[in-house]
Amino acid sequence: MLDRFNRKINYLRISVTDRCNLRCTYCVPTGQFKWLPHSQILTFEEITEVIKVAVELGIEKVRLTGGEPLVRKDITELVRMIAGVEGITDLAMTTNGMLLEKFARLLKEAGLMRINVSLDSTDPSRFAEITRGGDLNKVLRGIDAALEAGLHPVKLNCVVVHSRYEPDALRVAEYAASKRLEVRFIHQMNLSEGYFTTVEGGEGGNCSICSRLRLTADGLIKPCLFSNIGFDIRKMGVREALMTAVARKPASGTVNQANNFYNIGG
Image (cartoon, rainbow, N blue to C red; front, top):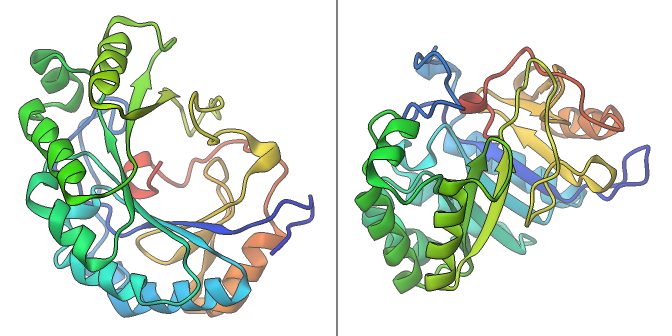
């Protein structure tokens, strides 16, 4: 699929849940979530149907996000269903890593190819402060489990306030080097104010080459993270929602006052 700016759209990011087991300060500044009713959350069958139609239209890459995707019940079964869709060349997940030690091998066996783990500090007390109670040791064990399971590559997502040379980011970079892991430094964004920059070590935030669509947990196809617009697959039908999102994809991001990071997947 090509949008009106001649960008090839081949990447679908899917928020499988708005639930999360952490309350990270940059994701949920107030520390409070407003959950979607369970009845509004897409079923595995609905998600798989979206992917099948998306692949027919040219989507090749799929990433599962949240919230925290590993808190979604039977998540490995969803991975298995998606992995069975012919035409997907890249099936990945972004996780906070708290449950990864338990799921890494199961995810690999189900067909997950690679994984990104959020890691903003390697200091246990700072990590607990940023995540409002997260256990760093669980995340580090999860990273080791992902490596042992053969999820490749394992990448780290590190949110920074000002630069990759902040003390926490430098320590994350040192840890990554010791494990031969790639790091993506993501400058803290603000959806409602429209603040974002290009990800260091990745392609996110570079609007001129953006290849992404997003599927929210309640069934909206969104053409841009920093946009209020979304197209309901249940009301419009999957194909129409996807094609309309591509046609309406903006040249660059502006603001998003309709979503929060925890319910759109970052």
